[in-house]
Length: 365
Image (cartoon, rainbow, N blue to C red; front, side, top):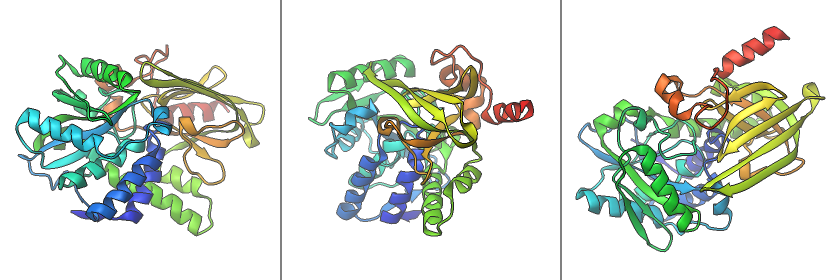
């Protein structure tokens, strides 16, 4: 068991924004809620998957909706607790620990606040290893663990219990509840045993977020360029450098959809890069050439600080480095690509691992 204090939370927030692939909700809000929870409840207690007993009972806690909504609809801090309370009541059993749904953005930190309020530890794992747009996009789906019964809770205290035939329908029904209540809700779902969590979760992701954020912070403190450090830590690749000259976003169907266009600078002068996103970046192209696609991660880092730029934070004139990050091997399986590959999101291309695309592009040059 580790004790997580304010410094760890600060680092996690930065690392989570990198793994959010542009989406996941602004981690700044999650960071503020986590810091306030430390003031109220004391430092967090975080356990590894190995420390979780096989017979423990755990669930995921997270927000669902369009990240841009949070710019105006800030959580009051009790929605997540209300969702977990309602799910415990539905199942007739208390949870022994709380898990993050995803390792990116807001949802990487919100569960800490919920766990503290419930007086239970947070588990150092998640169901994505990144951020993804939909509720079903978790490794737990790949291992046939149902999301339901699931509970949706809004800031007013409205509670909806979802009983769906599969995780795809759990997404649809929950998303419609989010749209009805203003574009974002909190959820508790994916109740499972410790044994199931060990088998189907991605381990150590909260610590990984912390390591990424700490590496960026220490690079700044030592006055060195953080980008090479981050690329090495993530096993990532620089795909493009450019100036943002066009961005379009629309909130539709409970998602933020849109594109961002970069004009190349430095070694990329005369070239262009376009990113397509649905909450998270899903496709990066330069002309007709695909640079990276889901389920691999695409992130935009500020060219000076290497701090991540979210889709809702992208503004005209921003200078960024587009990087591609290899995803966890679970998502490169046949079933993983079926529900989170480029064709699932409507792009008529086959998935090629980002490292293979980089090698192919290098050989052509």
